[in-house]
Image 1: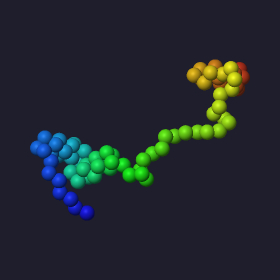
Image 2: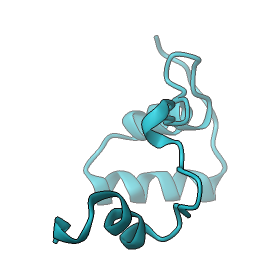
Image 3: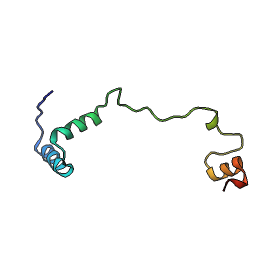
Image 4: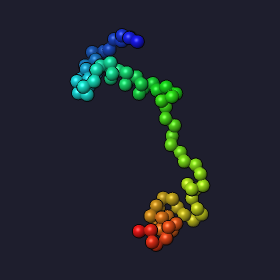
Length: 79
């Protein structure tokens, strides 16, 4: 589907320079920019999240000290 848009001179110059630099067409760059700026519901990523008993901290263990947590959970032979 074709559409025409009129760009300001500075925007057109930047777009053409980027097309030369990336070896893409102006149309490809325009499509990429629109898709990035205005994502559809199917392209929006949900934040990665893990739920479960294996990610809950144990009483007395601070999850900010990873090495100490591993030593405490796996014991002295872990290394």
